[in-house]
Structures are given as structure tokens and as C-alpha cells.
Image (cartoon, rainbow, N blue to C red; front, side):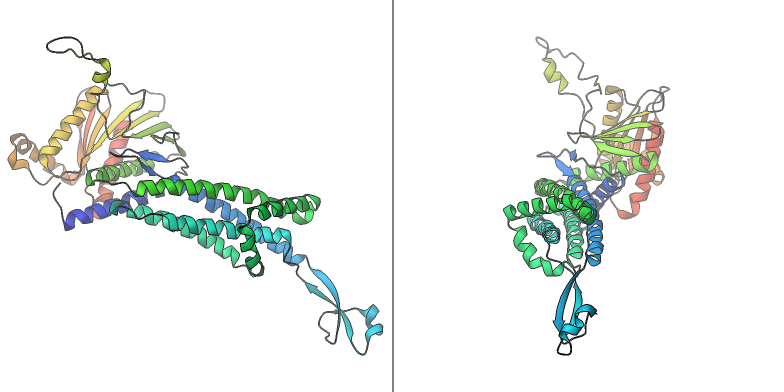
Amino acid sequence: MSGAGGEGRAEAEFMASYVWKTLLALYERLELEGRLRLRNVDSDLVVGGDAAAALKLLRAVRELSAVVRDILRRISAVVVEELEVSGSARGRVAVGLAAKHLPRALPVYRSRLELETPANLLLAATLVEVRSRLLELTRRLPAAQPWLEPLREHAERRLRDLLRACELLLCEPVLRPLLAKAQLLAADERRLAELEEEVELDALRRPRELRAYLRLLELRRRLREEVRMLGGEVEELGRTLALRITLDKLYELYGFTLLLQALADELKPRSANVDSEGRELKLETERGEVSVFYNALPERLESRVAKARALGLIDGEVDRDLVRRLRGLPDTVVVARLGEGEGRLLLLDYKYTDDYRYLSQARFKALAYLYEFDADCAAVVAPRPRRGAGEDEEALEHRGFYDGIAERGGATVLIDSNGKILAIVYADPREDRVESALRALRAVVRLSLS
């Protein structure tokens, strides 16, 4: 595509920022917990796992915050009274003992909080342990390729948010005196295990007084497991950040993200999940179910080409396995089962080109998909074309159509009486064109999946 240099760089930076911010925002909006694997030439781009794990951990830290507040309320209510004989009248005078010590001294009862208990030390050690592990994970985030830097920044912000949540709890005045000892305990796994057993036994003996600590023990185990899982996700993220992404692949991801946003806006899914392989995103709506595949074909989707026979021109039949490799692979497959009617099939290809000739070729490819997979709609998503028409007779012939639909965001072409649709969607990778592209894709979703 043209636009190398300043304009191309600006487009790439915008796409990178939009893709990662929007994908991760959709993860939160749809409450997704699985990892979406997006095929790249060398290796998969893995999105969402670290975000989901961080969200789970953040929820656990918030629960811990509630437990801490509960414990601190109980600590402030449990006071220890000690008898002290001194010249000061600070405290509650022990009237029954006053005659024995007066006039030289005055016996008084003074109240103090007993802070350094096994339960409170375990509470502080838990926070120190989680904070230490999060700091380690933050330091382990590697440098990213330029187009993946927004993803790295998002992951780092997530980890910093978790760190701040832990540090706010550690700033509680009641816990601060315990931190020095808690840090030593957090570094000694054997002593921590002994302390857990001691607190658990004490809480079982005195459930009314210490039931909040039973919740602490349960949360502590969850936190340790979820920090461990987050560590695995950060390692996976590190491998993703090291991948090289071409501008063509970045535009594919941009188009895919726009489509997901349009689907979420139009279908308003009640829930969503990712399959175990990370290839299928399933959206549950009031009307039924919609599955989205990126660079992957669902097993149930049949290709006319893959089922065909091929004969050598000189001799013999071509091996069926070789023929199956000829099947097409759309960038995105959307399978909808809405209402009581038959399922609907939408196929999309994303092309980072502003060349009329290449757009014409992409249009023929989309038409081929309609036939090969018996799809209801095939769409080409691309920037508005601006060059190349004068170098090719066919492109020159088609230019009037492509220019004429530019102000409409693209067009849908009703191919035959069976209702098959060819769609051209213009999606320039610019911030001021995002809403136009989303409106066009929402219209394609309505028309093709209804």
C-alpha cells in the first residue's frame, strides 16, 4: 500500500493502539476469560489471557481488601487491659488498689491493641508476598515490537493497578508496624506454612472471634494460585510481544477488531466464551448463538473445492489430501444460528491496499468464497482506493463504482434471487474514519445475519 513514511507510520500507530485497546476493552465488556489465538505467519498472537488473569486477581485483591477492613474493625474492638502502677493518671484508675499505692503512685488500667499476633502477621505477609510477585512480573515484561507496544503498555498498567491495590492495603496504620517481620516471613516458605496451620487451628477454635481469618486463609490460597496463573500468562504475553507483525497483518487485526465491535454493538451478547484452542469466539444472544473464527475454518464448514476430484492432465487422479489443501481460508468466518431459521454464514477478507486493481482481485476472491462455501454474504474490508486505475483496463472500468460508493461507506451487492450478498466495506485506518467503518460493518451484520 502507498503511504510509506509519515502517513503510513501514523496509520500503523493508530491501528496498533486501536486494536489492542479495543480488543482488551471487549474482553472486559464481554467478561471473557479464555485466550484468543490469532494466527500469524510464524506463531500465534495470543490476546486476552493476561487481561483475564489480571482481572481475576484484581477481584481477589478487592475481596482481600474487604477482609482486611473486617479484620481491622475487629482488631480495634479487641483491646488488652494491663495494670500499671506509675505517677501518671493516664488510664482507668484501679480504685480497689489505690489505697495500697497512694500517695507514692497510682494504679491504673491502660488499654492497648495486641497487633503482633500470628493472624495479623499472616495477613501482612500475604500482602507482602503478592506485592513482591507482582513487582517481579512487571520487571519481566520484555520490550515489544513497535506495533505491539500498546499491548505491553496495557499489561504494565494492569500490573501497576494491582500493585497499587496491594500497597494501599499495606499503608493501613495498623499493619505498618508488622511489615518488617512480614517481609522476613514472606521469604520463608516453611515458616509461612507453619503460620498458616497455626492461624487455621486458632480460627477453628475461636470461630466467632476469628472467622474473618478463615476467609483470609481461603483468599490467600486463591491469591497464590491466581498470581501463579498470571505469571504463566505474562510469560505467554512475552512471547507474543517478541513477534514481528507486518502492516498487512496489522490491518487484518484492525478489521477483525472493528468487526467484533460491530457484532457486540448489533447483537448485544449476554455472554461470551473462547474455546479451549482459542480459535472460536462464541457469543450468546437473546436470539441465539454466533461463532467467530479468525484465520480458521470450523470443522462443520464444507468447501466445494476440498470435496472435489482432481485428475492429472496426462495420467491418474490427484491425491485427495492435496486437493483439500486448495480450499480457501477467509480471514474471518462468522456462523450465526439465530431464531428458528437455518444458520447464516458471513465471510470476510481484510486487504490493506488503496489500489483499485488489488481491490478488484479481492472482490473476485470474495465472489469465489460465496460459491465455494455456499455463504450468505462475503465482504471485503479495505481502505478507500486511490491509485492504480490507469494501469489496468478492468480497474479503470470499475473505478467509477468504487469511487461512487465511497461516501456511503461501501456497498452491498445482491448477487441473485437466492439472497447472496457481496459487500465492500471501506475502513480507512484513521481515527476520524472509525465510526464510519463501524456503521458500515453494523449494516453488513444486520443484513447478512438476519
